[in-house]
Length: 468
Image 1 (cartoon, rainbow, N blue to C red):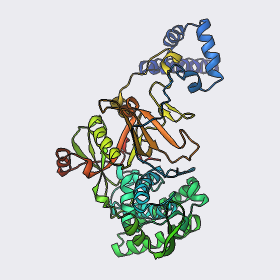
Image 2: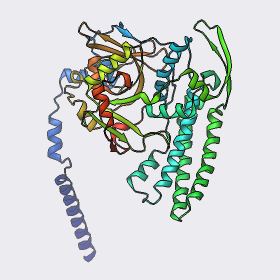
Image 3: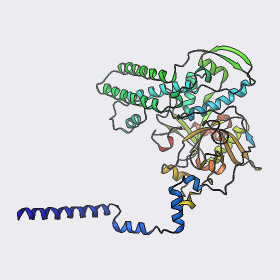
Image 4: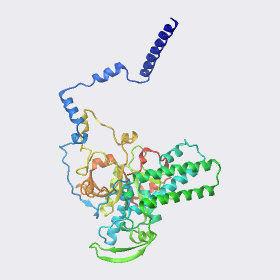
């Protein structure tokens, strides 16, 4: 009898606990039975919704949402900078490097009357990966006194290395290491397909980072930490050489004219080649940003957002979209391409290469609206710069107002419009984020804004993911 009573009481208390638990969950915002009933009743199945369901379940949403009445396919541009040869970053996140070097490539081709010339992106990528490795290791040394769950230390271990980046990396790399033609250090499987090499480098760097922190915890001297770091970078260098080849200290190269006729054969170092053929003052390039979540006409700097430890942090001037457009137009009219980045995946028609906010009508298909503006999309992580390309053309109306823009992409000549993407001015307003322009195209009143002390921002800010 006592055993029966215990069982009954046990069941009773279990049921009471379950009931309390369910009630508590409801009070905390859970979906209870009444709420679920109301939610389900809000959906009314009709022949139309059934047809939509059948269509969406078996098809690509973009195919169904494509706005067939939007026939914008005009490829004429009133102002365009000529280029020769579309590049292809393959399965890598090096769009920032391709874009930056393509800006310089256009200058080299025009200045020296070359044919289809390309820089070795593999050469620059090698040094980028070594420098990023050093940046991580040195930052771990510098923060060794902080706890492992410190926000900066945590960010470093989450982001030890990657193949993404932005224009500051191009500036730092070419001024320190120079450049070489593509045929001197061609692409490899690992440079074209970076994910496995990046994974292995990341894994090794994290291991090294823990070792350095352990040494720091035992009060190791700075010279011992430096010696250990150099030893670790030797391991990284070996991995890079095995995957990418070893960068040349000097090389012999034959310059050819536009018809392919040899002009001169000389021996170069990467820096002497860069100085002779590029000869560009990289300090004149200024990054502009259109970020409506922050005050315009202010300079911002991103901590730890650089490619070279002894180089420059990412610094930019935040401006209105109309100010940026005027500088972009001035640069294109003067036959000068620009580094440009945007949220490329939004409203992109991959078959035609057109970026147009009217390409897809998701609202009609889903029976609701999507009304966030640019500021709200940034604040909620719904939009941000994801890809860099080379801005090379603008189509102006009779009032000198832009109707559309064109960029040279690095996804191969068969993608989009013969390797280019074309965007409407409305799309430009909503999804363009960064532009790098020569200082000579920046009005004096805006140049003065560059004299102010930058506002320092953390590297984990949502707007500052590296472009891929």
